[in-house]
Image (cartoon, rainbow, N blue to C red):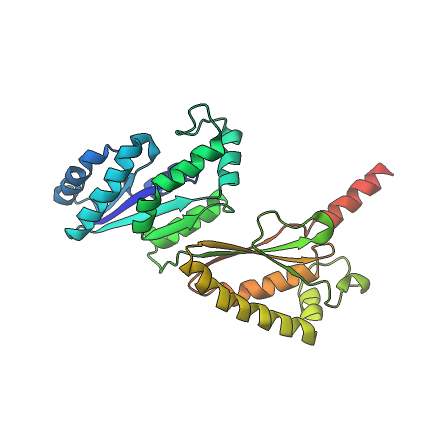
Length: 297
C-alpha cells in the first residue's frame, strides 16, 4: 500500500493536490485528528478491501500543538517500519498573500493581524514536518496543470523525483525584469534578428530565428558558460535548502534572442533529475502593441 501524507503551507495548494490524488484513485482523508493517525494507518493496512493508495491531508487547522505532535508521530511510525511518504507544499510569502486576497479567505493564524506575519509563523511551526518530507514542491510559479503533471509523475507514474525545480523565463527589458527572478541574464549583446527583414516578424520559437542566433560563436559560448554555472550553483543551492530557481533571460523586446536562449538552456536541463519548465513572458507583447496602435489610428 502507498500511504502519502500531504501537508505544507496554507495557500500552497494542499487542497488541490488532494483533489488530484483523489482523481488518480487515492483514498483521501483530509485533516484527520492527529491522535488517530496510528489507528487510521493500521486500519487501512488491515482492511479487507485491499486499499492500495491512501492520501492523508494535514494542515494548521489541527492547531499548533497538533502539528508538533504530528511530526513526532510520523517520525515514530517510520521508525516502526510503516511505509509513509510525506509531501510538503510551500510557496513564497507574497504569492500566498496574493492567493488569499484573490479568494478572500482568512489565513488560519492571522486572527485579525497581518497576514504576512501569520504566514511566517506557520512556516516556523511546519519546520519539523518539512524536515521529514520525502518530497518538497514549491508552487510559487506553478499553474494547476503543472502541479498536476508533477503529482502524477511522482505518485502515479512513480518516476524519480528531485526536490528542486527550475523555471526559465524569457522577457523584454523594455517591459521590466520579472519580479520573482533569482538570476537575470542579459543577452542583448547577441546578433539581433529584429534587423533582418524576413526574421523580424518571427520569434525565437521559429527555427529560422533560433538558427540565426545560435550560429553565433558568442551565443554558443554563452550557453556553455551558463550551463556550467548552473551545474555549479544548483547543488549548492540545494544544500542551503532552496527548492526552486527562477532564471530570467532578457533581450530588448523579449521576442527573439531571449526566447532562443531560454529554449536552448531549457533543452539542456529538461531531461535531468530536476523539475524544469520554460515561459516566454513577453513574446507576444510587441505584436499586441502594434495591433492596438493600428486600431487607434
